[in-house]
Each structure stands twice: as C-alpha cells, then as structure tokens.
Length: 397
Image 1 (tube, rainbow, N blue to C red):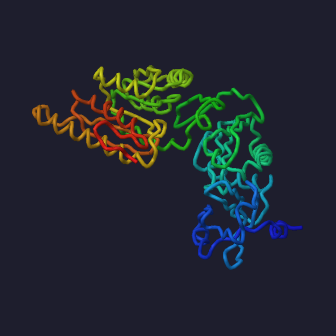
Image 2 (tube, one colour):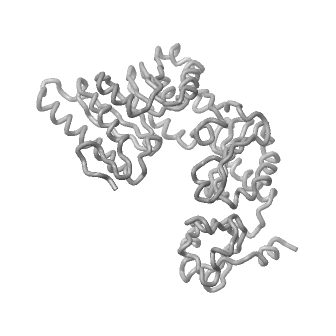
Image 3 (cartoon, rainbow, N blue to C red):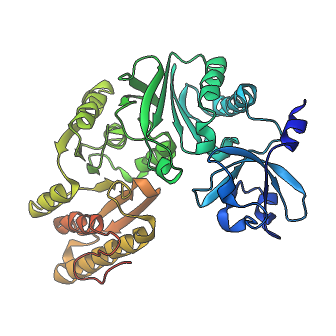
C-alpha cells in the first residue's frame, strides 16, 4: 500500500471551523483550543501518535503528530509521506545543503526544528560529532530512525542524544543523556569566525554550544573599543569573552558558577592566544552572579562593556522589558546627577550593556568615575523575577 493509502487509515484530528487559517499561512502548530474535541477528543490519542489533520469541512490538511498533554496539541509535518528513516534522511540532507552554502566549516546548527520541517528536533554539528535534542513525543518515537538517518547522511563518529531540556517536561517525556556512538564525555570542537573552542557536549549547557548566538557574538564586536575592559556574566566556556579579547579588549573578566566551564573558558583563551595577539588578559571568577556583581559594585570596579545572559539569570521574557527599562532609567538618572555635579568633565563615556540571551545591545552613557552604576543596575536586573522587582520599585507580575 502507498504512503497515501496508509495515511488515509490514520486516525483523524479534526479542527474547529476556520481554525485552519494559520496552517494555510504556513504555521505548523495546532493548539488544543483549535481542535474539535467533540468529534475528535484529544484524550483518545496517545502522546506522539501520527494523525491526519482535517478541517471542519473534511478537507485534508496533512500529517501531524499529536500530544494530548501539551498546549501545542499537534505539530504538522508538511508531508503526506510517512515519517521513516528515508524521509528523515531527505530532510536532513536538505538542511545540510543549506548550511553548506553558509558555513565554510562543519560547525553549526544542522537542524533547527520547524525551520527545517522537523518539529521538535534540534541537531548541532561539531565536525564529525553530532548532538541531538528531541523535545517532543512525536520525535521521541522516531529516535532510532533519526539515528539511522544521521548515520546515512553524515556518518557521525560521535552521536549524542542530549534529551534533558525542560521542554520535555511539558511533553511528558523523561530526561536523559546517552551516547549512541562514540564517547559520552567527549569535548566538542568548534570553529567560529576563525576562533577555535572546545565545549562539553554531555555535561554542558543545551547541546554544549550556543550556535544560534553566533550572529550576536559577531555584533558584539562593534561595542568593544581597543583597550576596553569587559565583564562577561554567565560566561560559560568563554564564547563571548574570548571574542571580546580577540576584538581588542585589554581585560576580560568571565564570571560563572561552574568551575569546569571557567576552566574551559581559560583554555579557550589560551587556544586562541589572545594574550599574544592583542596583549589581552582574560581572567575568570567563580561565584554566584548576584554576589559577584554586588562585590564588584562595592569595589567600584569599572567596565566599558557588560555582557550578560538575562535568561541564565532567570529573568523571564515578560519581565525582561521591565528590567531593561529599570536599568535605562536608573542609568539616565545617574548620568543627569553626574553632569549636574561636574559639567566640566564633558561628554561621559559610553558603558555598554549587551544582553546576549535576548539578542539586544544598548549603549547607556555613564560618567567614567561613576560607571559602577552599571554593576549596581545589572545586579538589580538579576533580581527581577515574577513577583519581585528591583529595590524601590513596585513588583513586576
């Protein structure tokens, strides 16, 4: 029987009237409130089950896999072909051909979920090693086929399943890390714009490296003046700090709570010989970001640029704008006070706050002798949580 014939026998997931409009516009998610649960109750489906999606008038829309436990109750696969090893290999080859047009070396995010027609699947490539993250029940059911497809397309020497993201909780999936081939404790090799790094694949954050932040790291360069002093908070293995040092920063201080990450940050700096090339110095400091920033503020330490990952700080997206607003308001207030007290010093220097986790950079003018305000305000930003606001402000809910 053909794929089309088999697909016709799959259970149907029927949508309410007009709830297929987003799908026709190219959206690939179906939310639970868009399903006609009177005709097709979500409770009758198993997590990860393959279904054919129908509009309210029985028009066939395509195949999807379903999860009744999730707000995103189904994810479209943009095909009528049954997802098997051959289908997955074809999708991965298509993604590979796009990456090879953009990247001169094999270090990149190979598959990026829905963007590559593989919802719930992320694959990062570290040369001959690949790290796979599965975030949905539908893709979890295809795990063995994913492994075989990758072996066909790339022949990975190391293939690691890093299935420990919090997104799996919402799908009702267990958390685990396992090596399908190769060593579990292998370090991944990364080459980014001529810089070379090592990253921990099994024990590291996400898949070991943040390939999706490469463009933002490039944009950081314009904020780094020659001889600058840079603070990198939540530095991890030094991707941002090494980039800053390579771009002309005289001093870079990397702050993280992980000793292993800081050890790699220091070795990555040595690997790129930032001290020999630019006379730069990259140092590391282990500690809680809250405490370190408060200590630096008390010491009246001064930096030309502060790089910080607000997501690592636990600042949720709905409080991010409020946090940044507080930072800008406090910095502007400090600047007005500085200019009022000592106008003859002229235009103040620009201290940059670069929020790497949110792809945002902003320059805030702060008088040099009082640039410590940046540390004080950043420390306050880190305190912004649901139900918590910076000192002296109302709570952010």
